[in-house]
Image (cartoon, rainbow, N blue to C red; front, side):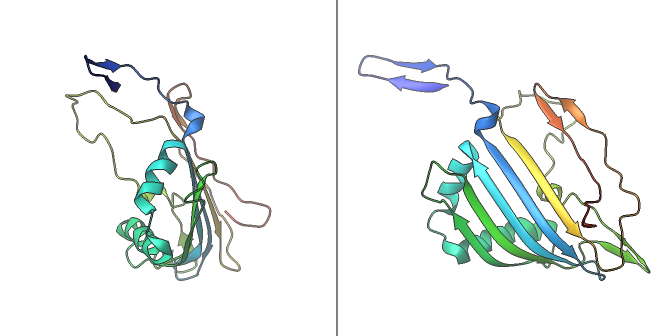
Length: 193
């Protein structure tokens, strides 16, 4: 809704919901897995539409060091001991282009190791999300500020001599007309997961 006012009266007008493709987040992690279970690599967050608008306001004036601190807060809650370097923003003031945030990340103990095996949970970005709608009953309607699409790509390069043994992805769920969740896990021709 929008409040439209003039000198005689104010009215609430129903405003249309934005289209799904107008607001999106693409999250990419290209990580090297080490034998000790730590990972190191590059993270890129690319945002358009309303999410980019909100993020531009949040990150405006921070500079690269301030951005590094904000990204560290985001990742350290899910991955204690994380370190962030080389943080940078692209297109902060160019509203016609996607807002792009990039950094280098190091995470100790990302994967579990046991002897000759390493157990990896590939939902790198999923750990950053807090559970929503945790109550058993609902008293109020659910409201989303705008429709958005999130696409996560996580590439994990295993250590020398290690191969993907048995990839298992959860089943896809949802209705493509409202909400959907799809996961694909596999080995690339390079041997990366």
